[in-house]
Length: 177
Image 1: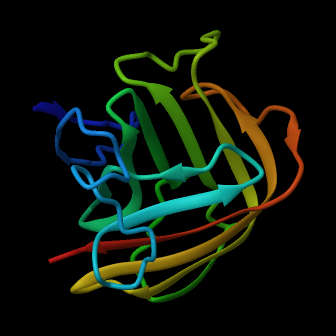
Image 2 (image 1 turned 180 degrees about the vertical axis):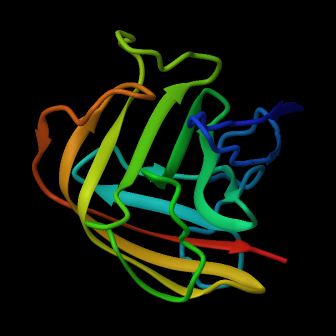
């Protein structure tokens, strides 16, 4: 078993993410099943659309001051993701969150790779429009989202890159005691 800790670095903030132990199983098989229905029957974090689809194998809530601000996880042991509101604004309150106000970012990288400026292995998006809807916060965190006005993201700190055509849709369903 390997242990994975994904940390988002933002000046002045100390968000926390703890992602559970992973095995070397192939996700989506009998030895590592994934519930991608976001139906409250199991933990699920998935999205698809204008960029490479993501289906979490293992993920955790990222919190700041006790409030959910994003998620960190992996699709496989070699592909990790940070997904959060750009300014680490809370995504904890039930209801619609305007992505134009609380921009959403996603950044994927191979495990143990630094996403410093100039790298060629990290890829993701900046979403500057859309809706992120929290349906429940406890005992399960459940949300759906539709993201648009997308731009490329290739590092931890750089500005948005070239436009990405289309939208990204997905959902999150995670136990949140």
